[in-house]
Amino acid sequence: MQYNTIDQILTRDEKALTVMAHDIKTPLMAIVSMLNVIKKGYVDDDAEKIKDLVSRSIKQAESLIAMLNDILDYALLADKSKVNREPVHLSDVFKDSISVMRTYVDQKQILFTYAPDLGKEKYIYGNRTFLLRAFNNILMNAVKYNKEQGSITINCRENNHNNIIITFADTGIGIPEEDLEKVFKIFERGRQARKNLDGSLGLGLSLVKQIVDFHFGEIAMNSAVDKGTTITVTLPLYKKEK
Amino acid sequence: MSHKILVVEDEIDILEAHRVVLERNHYEVLTAVNLGVAKELLGKHKIDLILLDVMMEKDSDGFNFAQYVKSDKKFKHIPIIMATAVNLRTKFKFDIEKDGDFLPVEKFMEKPIDPDDLIATIRGLLK
Image (cartoon, each protein chain N blue to C red):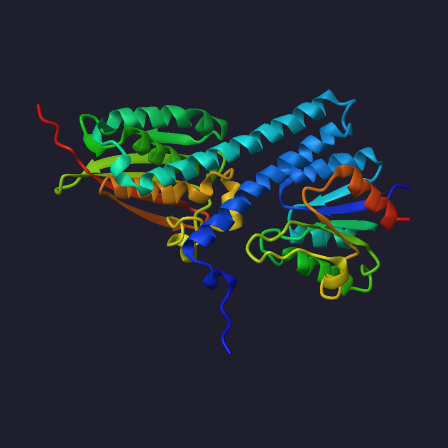
């Protein structure tokens, strides 16, 4: 007799909902646990500990906000007709994304390399906010999974088919080969991987894939455990009328 | 001499909350975020009680560790409190009466655990 596992029985939506509920519940339980310690008076005489527990609670709450933002974006992208498209100056998106990442990169003393005129005079016909979100999510992974004093390199080149090919290479922990195909699928990452990424990452790369799809592009990933990961995003260029 | 409690929990903030409450109640606390560390600490120290998260990296980690402790003559006397959350996928809810046979622990406590209840339970088990 053959048995089905729970994962085989649940539909994709049911699976997504249960994983989502779990991912929301875990930080909430941590918050309630820490605030209860304060409320019940266990640390009344220790202002530093109170501050520490409150800071940890805020960090957990922020990870929840990030996760819910991902969910909202994901839902919005499900109906592509509702998302505005316009010519987007690629170098502006890079500039904004790099400036957001700068603090995180510096904290971990990561060597960050990119050409200053990345995407100069290149336009994508799409949505600036979502493109920025995609680059931020990719770079956030590159930072969080990276080693201290590791490196992140962004490169950009144009091919003969009017596409721009952007590579994001990091020297992080890498992803085992058997997990590579799962990373772009909603909620299919391991529990540990989701935790490492401050909660927002259950959806992070699947959201990136949705965004790349929205821009008629392609995304690919190469990775080697303990060596690093390279994500390649190919996007069709928009020829702006002069 | 204060009792030594091993807390096994992979969510570091929950671990910290437990650690603070237990230390304030004069217990000596050892913490482990995975089963490897937990087993190592168990071998090195004389543990009086284990507070164990039911589901860590893998769904079965908590169960496996409880079995490991209770099947070893050196450790089987150590009471275990298992911190449980209703498993969203399986809808499992644990009960000492009905699940005690296959889950050899002394007490289940549902997460998030109230710190006062935790201390009362530990006092009861260490009497």
